[in-house]
Image (cartoon, rainbow, N blue to C red):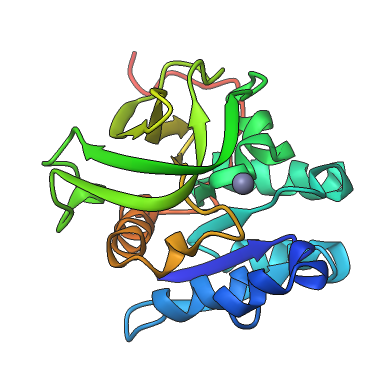
Length: 235
Ligand code: ZN
C-alpha cells in the first residue's frame, strides 16, 4: 500500500508545542506510525510545489491522508480538482480533525461541513460498529483526556456508516468516525487530532488510522470515468 500524508504544516512554524508533541510536524509523525513492511509512506505539505500533489504522486497513491486547519484557502483549486478526480477514480481519502473544513472534504461532500467546537475537553469515544474493519482491535470505548470538542450538528450528508461516536464532558455528542463512498473512492473522516493535543500518540487512535488506510485502499485505482454512447452487445 502506498500512502501520502498531506499536512499544511503551518502551526508547526509558530507553536512550539506542536513539534514538541509531533517531532518533524504532524505529517512526519503520522507517517512514522503508519510505515511498516506493507505500507510505503511519503509526505507532502502546503510549502511543496503544487502542494506536493502532482498527478505522478497521486497516480502512485492508494490512500491520501489530509490534515489542515489555518490555511485551507491556500490550497489551489487546481490541486483540489486533481485530488477529487483521483478519489473518483479509486484513491482512498482519510480526513483528520480540522480537515472537516478543507476544500477537498467540502468538495467531496457538497455541504458546509460546519460543526460546534471548543478546545480543552475530555472525550469518550464509543465504537458503535464493532464488526467494521476500521474498528478492528479497538475496545467498545476509550477516553482522550484532552481533545477539542467537536459537536453536532455536523453539516455532512448522511454518512455511509458511522463507526465511532464521540461524547464530550460539556454534554455534546459527535459522529467522530464516518465513512462515505464517492465514485470509486472510499472516504473516512475522523475527528480527534487537534495539533496541540497528544491524540496521535494514543495507541487506539494510531490503530484506527492504520485500519482506515487498509479499509480505504482501492482494489483498482486510476479508473477512468467516461460517458460513452454504447452499442448493444446482443441483438
Ligand atoms: Zn483543532
